[in-house]
Length: 127
Image 1 (cartoon, rainbow, N blue to C red):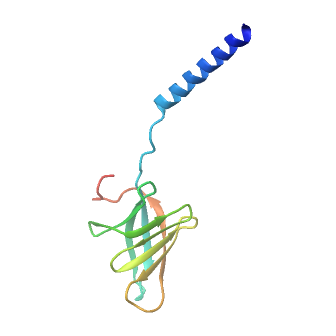
Image 2 (image 1 turned 180 degrees about the vertical axis):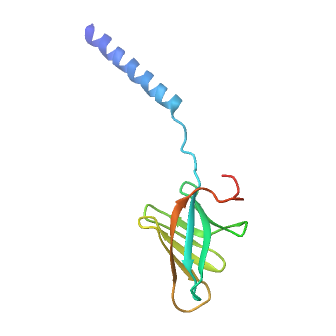
Image 3 (image 1 turned 135 degrees about the vertical axis):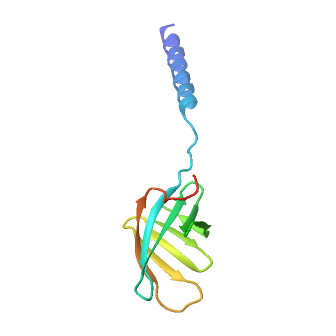
């Protein structure tokens, strides 16, 4: 008789804990994260722009001169973010902050720079 009572109590307790966890658990929410990036162009001029990415949605966009351009063919994993834009393709290494930009339609080299986490820039669209 005692074993049955213990089993019933344990089962009831397990069900209650499971229900409580299900009630307080919420789905993962997407959180856009901003990066402040800079690179040196072919003429030696340092260029700055902001990039926003969202791991859950799998999107990356560049924010420059007040406009936001979303990349295509974006892949985001634990190590890197890769995305294509009409004039260039970029790769950001999440481990060391390295940035590589390859201009579309040109032959030769990549532009190199770096990105660091930053707050949203002034004028950036809300989340």
